[in-house]
Image (cartoon, rainbow, N blue to C red; front, side, top):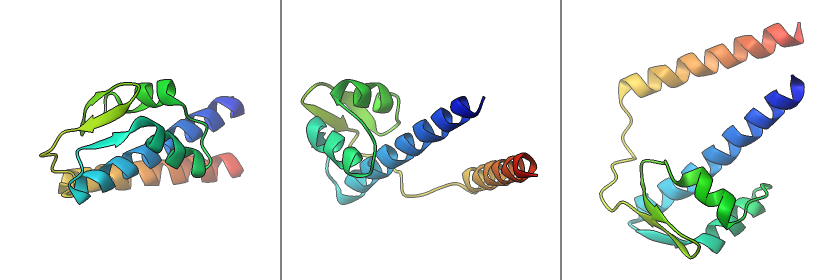
Length: 107
């Protein structure tokens, strides 16, 4: 059970780091990144990622238009810097739920 929890936490952290990198690119106005560059950035953050695992990770992200062995192409007009109040509330609920789960587990 603990192994599954660790694995889920790792995947969530990896997905968050990948999403943050892509959001930064969209915010700068870039519309593509070399797959190897993205893998290298994630590896520098402590993840173990190759082109295939990266493709599986980002293919369903809203700002990704396409991905292949060479590059990740982003949607040019992704409005990712504005968050709705509902999304903020959902995040707060999720954080509260995770905090409660951690406290309950530690007690």
